[in-house]
Length: 229
Ligand code: SF4
Image 1 (cartoon, rainbow, N blue to C red):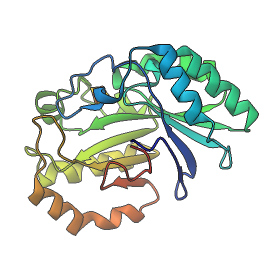
Image 2 (cartoon, helix red, strand yellow):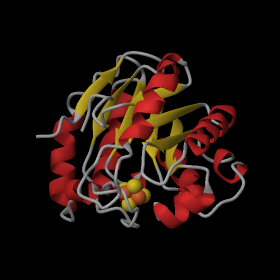
Image 3 (spheres, protein in one colour):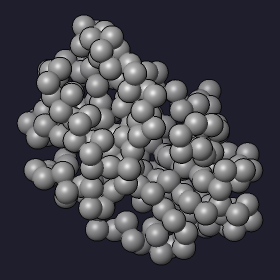
Image 4 (cartoon, protein in one colour):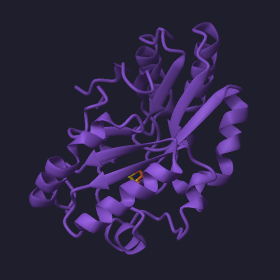
C-alpha cells in the first residue's frame, strides 16, 4: 500500500498528497514506471482522491498535490474538490507538478484555483544529450531560462549509469542559481532498464550529503522520503 498523505515539517512546510490521475500524457521517460499508479476510471480516481484529501488540515497553509504524472491529468472533480478544500482550510499556496511541455498552460491552473500556485517540473538533468537521448524526457530546451521563466522548482535525478560527476555538479549549480528550490532524487532501480550507478551514488553521498541542509534543497535518498509513495 502506498502512503498517500504526509506532512513535510522542514523548509517549505506543507502537507503533501499523492493522488490518482490519468496516465501521464508522455509516459515514455526511460526511467519512469509511475504508470502503475495511474487509473483511467476518472470517477474511481476522484472517489479515492477524496478519501486522501480528507486528511488535509491546512495547518501550514500550503498543500502539495502530486499524482504520478501532471496536474493536468487529475480528474476534473478532484480539482474542484481541491479548490473547495483550500477555501475551507485556508490554504494559500498549492504546489503541483507539470512537465515542461505544459509551460504555456500553467496559468490555466493558477486561474482555476485562484491562489498562489508553485510548479515543480522534472528536468532530471540540464545536460541536453543525457536528458533527451538517455532519459527520453521530451523537454527540449537549451537555455535554463526556458524552464525557470515558468517553473518555480526543478527536480533533478542523480546516480544513473551514463551520468558523470561533472554533470551532476553542474546540474545542481544551475538548479540552485535559477530556481526557488530544487529536489534531488537519488535514482532507485525500478522495473525500467535504466540502472543506478552505485559508485556514483556513493560519491555523491560522500561529497554532497550536506546539500540536504541547504534551505533550497530537498533531497530524496529513498523515493518515499517526502513521506508519500
Ligand atoms: S513526465 Fe513524469 S510521469 Fe510522465 S513519463 Fe516522464 S517521469 Fe513519468
